[in-house]
Length: 189
Image (cartoon, helix red, strand yellow):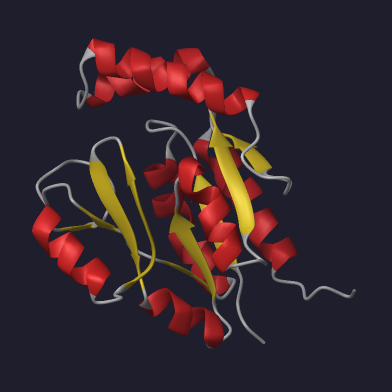
């Protein structure tokens, strides 16, 4: 039996990296691997445990078919290594740090995908983005505006599972593990 793709999304600053780091070991116990993304952000950048490559290297990898999923957002290119498909075929579940804008493409390629949206209250998100110090105030305001637009429109007809990460990280981890545990049970239909 193939594994299931767990597609985690959320606005920048919602705590996806913290959630993934805190849940990594318990996810492994649930036969769920975390896939590292390839990003055209320098390896020295603070943030997720990703593989940093130049835009030229990213393009070369994409043309060589090295990505299962790839997209552009916020001036960067993101790719999910093709190794993910091997893990899924081997029966492992795989969690990826995905993009809300790329959800439709991901569902087309992985129909059993479990979409999970990490949410956070706007005041908490603003504070996290300011503390992080990667964007200007103008860029932060633009991110908050995009986040509000995403909340108002649905990108697919598929239900998206929401996890609120405005409070204690342990609560969000518990919710994610519950979703993965539930989704690991084979469909009886």
